Length: 374
Image (cartoon, rainbow, N blue to C red; front, side, top):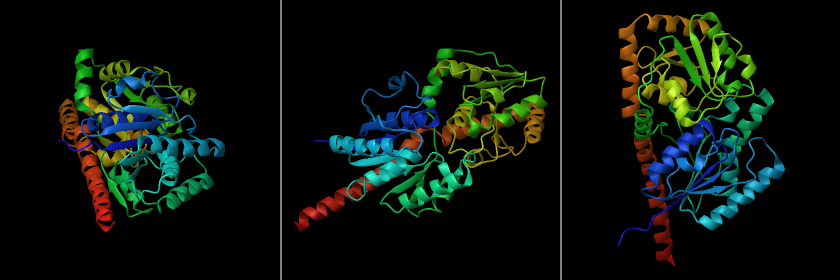
């Protein structure tokens, strides 16, 4: 008779963008081994058809009081909802994702009877669009929450270094993408003619993604076609005449648009470990990224892409690689190899499973010890 399947409860307020892609990849890989439950919040970036991306075995449970901003009334409501969901699910392990879920979850659950994990996906106190006071308050929340019985699993080496400033109860597992799903989508889309002068990025047009720098680069390269796949509140910042803003596209349309470009740039002011970068590496697009945590943990200049610090850096590298086809081919081949060997969901899920199994074994050992004493 096989061992009873353990239950894992994932909690994610930020059910959109990279966190959504991460959860889909991890949950679908782990559904073979565990009963998976996801307590989630809805954001503007949450796909309308988000349920279809998850394996049918995964149970999705909405937390209606989840709000991105701090709101005492809704935060208390979400706190109580999480407790109620956990009482219903009776999980063997709980994993919190993003800052809001991480703060509420670490106080809703004590982590003593049920192993508790937290992944920040980019710390709020690193977000440079917030003033100093707000960033200090976010750091204080993280510092206070870090005293709880919980292991923080960072999604990149750079994020892990920040975590160690808060707690020693820390691990890290690199983000990964679902290579098999990427292959299926590419096959379904078929051949796409690549525009030799097309440069793209993908994501919400917001302060974090630094559209001003993207626009500055485009203004300095009027002979090239720049594409921003996505939409957002800072759309008006992208006023260079050679920038195309697509608006939000479904996954297949966004993939087709990405495949037709030659170079991917990521101008972000901060990141956890961006899924759009990993996907672009797998698509064999030359990747140029801004010099911040997450980006520089993956990209090594001249090896699998380029890390840049200014608009002039981006311009210089773009001109250089467009003029050297051999250099371009070598770098994009290495980038794809890195995804296949390091940054994919199968490897990511196996590492998470090792951590989970270690925690579950410890929990079972404590239970057996208590039975013997009783």
